[in-house]
Length: 91
Image (cartoon, rainbow, N blue to C red; front, side):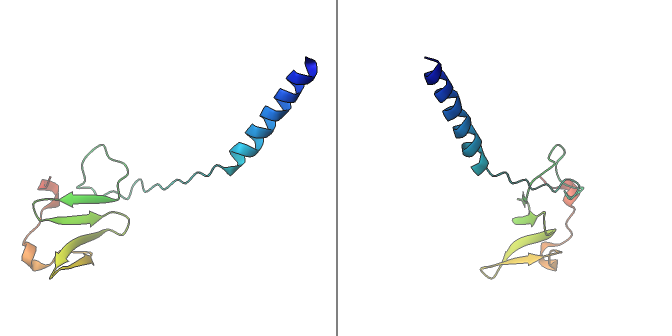
């Protein structure tokens, strides 16, 4: 009986030792990079959608994404056709 218990303990310890060594953890944190005009309470997002203008904002690169003649454009500022944009008053 002792041999069975000892064998079980050794087997389980080997399973846990080698089974957990294959785990991978990836963490991506951009706290502090969120725009001041973003909604309160979100400390990590990659994209914001601004429906009033139909554009996206990509936080890691701090660029706007919008369609221009059927192609997606990444830019640090919106073109004049969007007019004056007050991001603090958007949803």
